[in-house]
Length: 282
Image 1 (cartoon, rainbow, N blue to C red):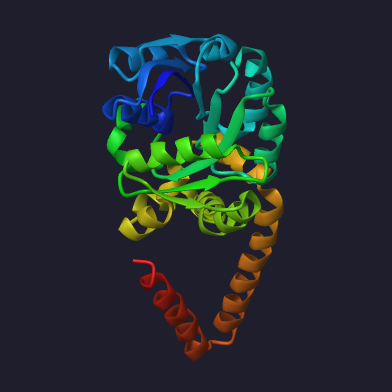
Image 2: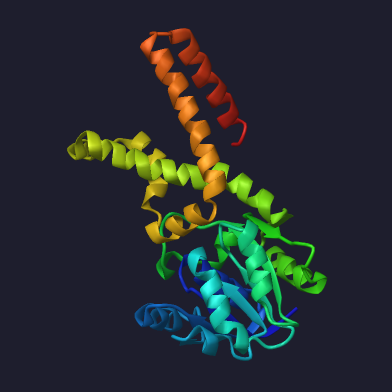
């Protein structure tokens, strides 16, 4: 498996790491990058992450046989429309976005005849963004979710799977809608809560943040994630997220009742159940 030209649309942490991994494992001849900031693209080229760059996504994809979408997910549909006429037959388009569901079906519908979209989501990276923390190794021993549909081309699916396995990732195939139900619970809700814990302390008294210990920092670490990325994720998965926010509020209401009643037994039981579940995931 080898691609003559790969287009990386979005050369941030994940996009740059993907490009680095393509080079490390010899899966591609030429890598061209696209992004909003020319300065970042110049740095990516200077670091050898990409071979060249364009500020126009359509030009970036000209003659590319592999295209990776690594921008914020809210830009996917707009970019797909812009690049549509530049995509050559048999090209594979995939992504690293944290939302699938309807977005996968929209992306499939925007592909020209003979061009194949396969949704992907590597569970890798950090709350930090940018090429300075990019590395091919971040995908090793990570899980990568691939979300095929009834419209997925088998050859394209096999190639995308093989790329991630070559990177050292464990690939799991999951229905796009089920993916969004899972990650609304274990990723999108925690990010939303982390942001709002910080905002809540600021509402109480922002000067208290200066007294934060490691526990607070660990709990809210992901609130350092790029806001524009998580804005898009939350809005695109809002139905699942709204449902789970209500469940979370119900849990807070129950704990509030224990506190009002000075019910130490119920409070300890609640915490013990959570601790047992948490220890079960390592």
